Structure formats: C-alpha cells, structure tokens
Image (cartoon, rainbow, N blue to C red; front, side, top):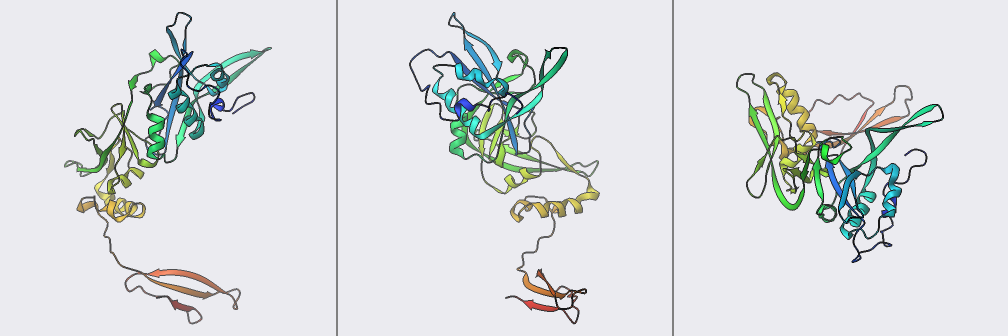
Length: 318
C-alpha cells in the first residue's frame, strides 16, 4: 500500500472489543456507499466508499469526510461508536481490499513535489452468503453514489435499503425488424411487480446472487436465466447481427448449461443433442521413439470417423 500506510481498517480486524456498545454519546458515525463509478456491472466486483462524520462540540454532526486507507489511524481515535458501525467496518476490513482512484494529494519535500495516490474505495469480490450479506447491509446509513468528488454534497446520492427479498431473473430477447439484429438483456421482476431492465442504477453483486435496483438490495432467485449474468452485462443490451447468429449460438453453448440455452428463441438456439458419449483410450506410438506410446483419452459421439494407424491401439471403455 505504500510506505507508512496502515493496514486498511486494521483497527477493526481484531473484533473491536475495546469499544463495545455503550450508552455514551457517539463521537463519530459512518456512512457506507456502494459506488457505481468504481463497480463492475458484471457480477464480479463492487466498490464501497466510507464516509466519516464527527460530532462537533455543539452536539451537531459535522461534514462527512471520505475515509482513506492512508489515514486509517483516525478511526482508532473514535470512541463510543454505534455497534452497527463497528460491525460493518469489521466486515469490510475482512472481506474487502483498498483500491486507488484518480484522486490524489500532493506536497513538498524540500524543493521536490510529490504526489500521493489515495486508496479511498474498498473493493469487495467473491460470493457472499445471505447471512453475511444481511449483516453487512443491515445498517441505517447505506447509500448509493455515482461520482468521484471529495465532498458529499457534490456526489449524487440515493438511500439504500436492504430488503433480502427474492427477485426473479428472466432473459428478454427482441429482434429489430429493420436491421434483423437480436437484442438480449437480463430482466428482473421484484415481489411488487416492478420490472427492471436498463437503468444506470442497476448493479449485480459478486456471485450473481444480489441485485441493486432503485435504491434497494435484493437477492436473485436461482434459475436458468441467472446463468446469463455471466455473459450479458446488466443494464446493457447485447446485440447479435443476423449474420453472426451461428457464431453467437456456438459461443453461448460453450459457456452456458443447456437449461440456460433453452431460454433463447428458436432462431438463436444451437442444436443440442442429448447423447451419452462412448469413452475410449487411444494409444499412439511416438514416431521418434517407437517403443513409447502417447495416451489420449477421447469421447466419441454418434458414429465418428476413426483415424487409426496400424500401430495404434484403441481401448473402448464401457
């Protein structure tokens, strides 16, 4: 992380037992933001920004300042933190790693000017179990943000609410009559009947198990369409020209299970033959070393043409 930098959120990795829940007035509180600017909308990573708000001597809350891992020592001076803040800080410290954004600071050392990159987002990746996700998101000060500004007031912000409800994932397929191009995109239906397709606030979290939509966090129900989140970006159309349909179908069939391919309309489907292969073990004699054989396991489908040399050996495995 660079010379002199502390382990991000290191003060909270050991459990934060020294603070504990007290009845005293908190000296600070924290806001947690899912940052759409630094998150990948492909179900692999998502970024979290942390904002710290200190209590003033007047008792009012001061301005929110973004926490940078370069200065995590400031966190250790906070007393009487709300227990929900300690819990989320611990989880982010355990599950995330800091990343550097375009923000930087500068200073002078003698006649030399230096620049310091700020590690001010925590990147979370991997599949989080529902219980862990609920502990992480069950906090009153989660928000959604999109922007790289240093002032809270300059960043578009939307409150975020963890619902834990299941949304159904579907695959929408449409054909443009003029161009003949096929368009595919994931579609989500919430329990209240709201349909989400393309929106700048859509985000699928790691493991393709959670959806952020309209300031709410949902769980994505298992199903064939969820496999498509591996190849189709949420909130964006995947266009397939008519002349490239065969190549697309073959590409999709190499990545997705048969139950996901069955969601495609007939013109986009690649023929699927459900047939058990006949395994065989092929022993080919090496040209340079006649006494040595190279073993090749193979699987035969249908009635393939077998190209065997007299010196090759074929063992069919039942």
